[in-house]
Each structure stands twice: as C-alpha cells, then as structure tokens.
Amino acid sequence: MRSTPPANWELLEAEAERLLPQMVFEYYAGGAGDEVTLRDNRAAFARVKLRPRMLCGVEEPALATTALGQHLAMPVAVAPMAYQRLAHPDGELATASACGALGVPMTLSTMATASVEEVASVATGPLWFQLYVWRDRGATRALVERAAAAGASALVITVDAPRLGTRRRDVENGFALPAGVRLGNLEGLLGADAAPPSIDDGSQLAAHFAVLNDLQLTWRDLEWFRSLSPLPIVLKGVLTAEDARLAAEHGVDAIVVSNHGGRQLDGVPATLDVLPEVAEAAGGRLEVWMDGGVRSGTDVVRALALGARLVLLGRPVLWGLAAGGEQGVASVLDRLRAEIEEALLLCGCPSVHDVTRAHVVRARAGTSG
Image 1: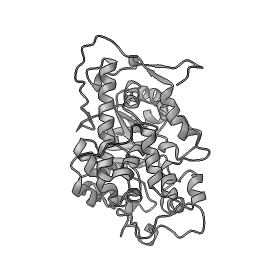
Image 2: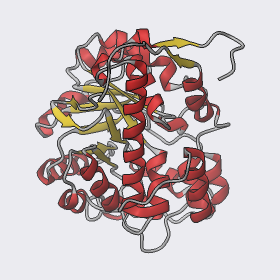
Image 3: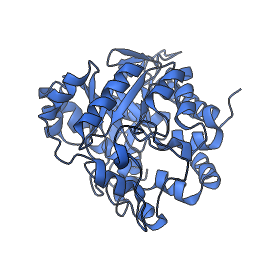
C-alpha cells in the first residue's frame, strides 16, 4: 500500500527538510544568486487564474496523452535530477520503479548515482536520458550510445548549463558527495576527470563541471548529436522565442521551457511567464514542454493552457523520495494525477487536450494570489 503524503505540498517539503542533512536538502532546494528566479517560478503560477466553464457534462476526464509518439498516463514526466541516492538509498532505482507503475516517464540525469543500465533494468515506463555535453566528445558519444543501447527512448540535452550558476547555499555548505556515492554513468568513461575533485571550500559540483563541461556547444552540433543515435532530441533550457524558432529550424523534436529550476542565471523570467511566447514561436513544429515551480495539478493545467504539451516535475519527487523511497515517489505522482483530474473536471474539460488559453487569465495588478 502506498504511503500517504502530508496534507499539502509545503508539509511534504518540510518533512524532507527534517529527514535530510542540511547540505543535501539545501542542494536540492536552493537556487542561484539571490534566488529571485527560484521564488518567481512559484509566484508565476499565482499570477495565472483558472477560468472554469460550467454545465459541460464532464464525468471522468481523460488524462492520457503522448509525447514524442510515446503513450503517457498523464501530461507529466519526472525531470532529470542528480544524486538521488543522497535522498534515499534506493535513489534513481526507486524513482524509476514508481514512474513505471504510474505510467510516467523518468528522465535520468547524467549525474545520477545509478547507471543508465541499472535504471533501465527496473524501468517499466518510458526512460529518457538527460545529457551534459563534455569537452571529451568521445566520452559524450559513448554515453549517448550506452543510453540508446540500454533502452532510453529520448535524448534530453541540457543547454543552459555550460557552467554552473553560483549557488550560494552549496558554496556556504561546501557541497560534496559523501564517500561511497558513485556516479554510475561516468565510471570508466572519463578517467581521472570523472572523479569529483577534492576541494577545500566551495561547491564540489561546480568544480566538477568547470573541468568537464563543453562551453563551445553551438546549434551546429545538433547534426552531430543526430548522427550518434536514432533517439529523438529534446533541448532543455529554452527561454526565448528566438531559440524556439532556431530549435524548430534545426529539426529538434521537443524543447523544455526551463530555467533549471532557478539554479543557473538568476534574474531570468519564470518559465510560466515565457511559455506562451515560446509556444507561439514554435508554431507546432516541435513539442513544447516546461518545468519550474510546478507543485500541484492546477499548476499542470495552467501550463497546458499556456501552451505546454508536457510538464516536468522536479523537487516534489525528491521530497517524496526522501520521505518514503519508491512508495513516497508513487504517492506524489498519484496525488498529482488526482489533482489534475479534479482540475479538469471542475474546469469543464473532457481531456487534457481540451485545455486552451481560454481557461486562464492573468491576474490584474494588485490582485492577491
């Protein structure tokens, strides 16, 4: 039987904070700079109000959809998140198992604490692989080929992190991986560079990225990525209409409107605020997904109304993982499913595909959220 999460999402986060070491919780919860964008991702949802329609005769809204031609039980996937064994000993394996049981795709981070082969062995739903592009292109190629061979069905390339934004909480806490925590996807791949560096102060993760990441990635490289595998290509980290149009012109299959959960460039807009602009520029030529600040089923419906086909869920999954392992993640996803269903029913929408811009309105200035 699944454990029941706390009565609201804030209590779930508080429970995770109680259970996790401070360094780990703040690594997961924190953002870049003054954390303005981190806070604004949440505030943006309060600025968008739902406009329900009445007498629509909706009894059982249909939540099923597709992404990249793959069947999904609801318009939600789990975002790529590193180091999940810091939250629970089963880490990514627990998350993958819960996702499969609920028909939700899992996006596995390059920086996972389990390898793509290990996660694929327990995944019963779609498994997507998130890629950081290394300076060592041979290692990057090998990682993509491994993901495809293991059964990943999409390649999600993160494009907003050529280097890590300054995350002050991590610097102050001296964030570092505990002894014995391994990076399953990097073992044997990058030689000595794959080992997290020893540091006297600051963030070990930032130091690691400074050594590994390729800062010279351009649009021209997409042709090279396409040559590595038959996997659909998703770009994660798009925030402008200009880049949406370029992605479409370069044959990208989907983009994720994302500011990395407020963890990269502080002061950029909330993803929900730029979603309509990006979706309009995409013009149906590729799929538009989004993440950032999603905490409820009504948040998912707001994002669908503003142009998203799919929403990626991040931190609440980690809080569920910390609180209850596989069952905690399953409870989070199950609760989100119930909230989406309720929001659709009360908005008068027979399915997720019937949500339109007419179902939302921006709050007037001075209106409390």
